[in-house]
Length: 302
Image (cartoon, rainbow, N blue to C red):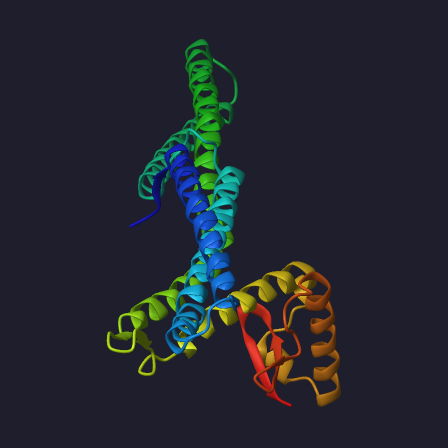
């Protein structure tokens, strides 16, 4: 089934979604800051209080900030998608790929039929001219054929313009799909890591006797991965914007010799450090992180 949508309706829905996401982003960001503040609070001291701070800091705080990051990614993606739609289609247009293709084929068939008839008329006129001499009846018939031929030519010209408009719009759908194919990748990645972390939260227990949360069974790496994923998404955006075609794919990178790989990694690191100075670029858990094209990240032991 082909693409079918009302452009104006989609744009309106994107705006509405972004208003909601903006509200969630602001609230999640505020909540994340509050969690950080609570985690750093040193006014009270007790095993239970420290347990609560640890629980909030390791579980709720990364989820809150991750939700804010997801909202930011979604809003940015929605803006990009809406801008792409406007680039290819007018706000009031209804895009219906299947209908357009069907009508395009029907118009082409009609065009071919008219063109075939016109060809027959032209051949008839040529046959009359080749007869030599122009008796009155023949001349009258030929003039009539010429008027019909001119009428067919005008209709064919108009029909050709309509067919071309259909073809261009159908091609625009394909171009739009290519242009928007990776827009939501960052948001989808954030959604995936958040879903895993939120599911893991249900495994947290609570010991009423000690007034402490039991987080030992929970895989805390799922929560640490939220910020890690967010950083890698930001890095990929910076590199795609700044390097463009110079951003290497994994196969291209691996084809370089060791010295060239180090030069490329250094170039990438300097770019990231310039545009995202607050991120840890060179090292991550004892490894060097080398972002590549299409959001890929290569880890090299150091």
